[in-house]
Image (cartoon, rainbow, N blue to C red; front, side, top):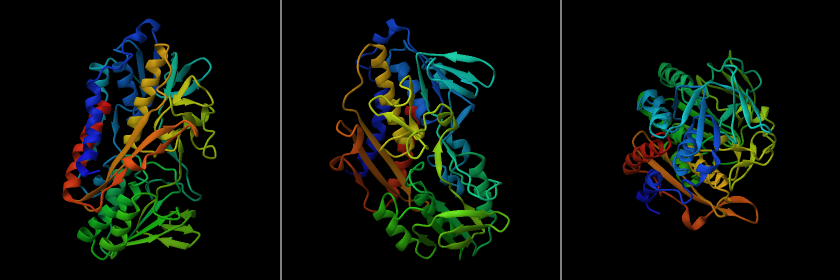
Length: 418
C-alpha cells in the first residue's frame, strides 16, 4: 500500500456520504427513534449516517454537553504552536441543518436500558427505541494526584492542551520533560509516541539541551515499532530517553516527582497520561463488564451491548479488538448505523463487516509517517481481526506524508460533522 492509498481510504469515507443505503427508506414505516449520547467522532458520525441511510426517516436526537467538538486528532500540534484549538473546533450546525438531527445540549445523568430512556441534568427525560452511547473515556487518578493542572494529560483536547503548551513554553532550555504512556488499551495507540517525536523536534529548536524522558508502562512500543524505534534511537536519540515497562505507583505534585517501579523521576514539565476507562455513563448503566470492568463488551456486528441489547456502545468506550482512535470510531459508527437501519427495516446486520484504521504520526514538525490496518469480522471468534494482506505502514517519514495528513484529517472530520 502506498502513501496515497491511505489518503484515498480516508477520502473514500467522505464519498460514501453520497451513496444511498440499500435499505434506505424502509425504516419509514417503523417510525423509529434513536437517541445518541455524546457528540464526538463516533456519536456525530452515527447520528449523521442514521439520518442519511434511513433516507431521513429515522428520528435521531443527539445529546451533547458542549456546543462544539474539539478534535483530539492533531491536538499535539497545538503544543508546538503549529495549530490553534480553534482550528480543531467542529460544530453541530451541519448535523442539525443539513441532516435534520435533533440537538439537545444537556448532560445525561442516567440511562434506563430496559425502558429505553435517558434522564437529563435539566430534569427532562427522553425515550427512544434504541440508544447509542458514545461518551468517550475518563481518566484514572493516580495516588497523590490532586491538581490535574500540575501534571496535565492533554489527552482530551481543550484547556489541558493549552496548559501543557504554556508549561512547555515557560520551561528553561536544558530542562527535563517527562511523558508517560499507560498500559493498553488507551485512546490513540500511536499518539504518545508521535507526541514524543514532535516534542523532541520542538525541544531541539526551542529549548536546546533539554531532555525528554518517555516512561512507557508497556513492555515495548505498541504500534509502528519500526518507525518509532528509528525515531527514538536514531533521529531523536540526543533528546529522547525511552524506558520500557515503567509503571507509576504514585506522584508528588509539590516536588514534580513520579514514583515508579524503576525509582523516582523528576521533571520540570510532566505530561502525565493516566490509565483510561469508559465514560462514567457506561459504568453507571452497568455496561462496563470487559477489560477488568473498564470498557463495554459489544457485538461488533451491530455494537449492541452484550449486557443490554437495546443499548449500543461505539467509540472509545467499547471493548473490541480494534484500536481506540478517531478513524475507527467513525468506522464503528457506520457499522452501528447500518445495523440499526437494517433493524428498523426488519433485517439482520451485515454478517461480514469490514473496518479500516488509518492514521498519520508526526515524526518531526514537518514530516509524518502513516499506518493503515484493515479489520474483518471473524465468525468463529466473533471479533474483528486484522487482515495482514490489506494492512501496511510507511517505511520512514516524509514531508509529503505530512501534507497528506492534513488532507486526510480534513476529509475525516467532514465525513463526521459536515
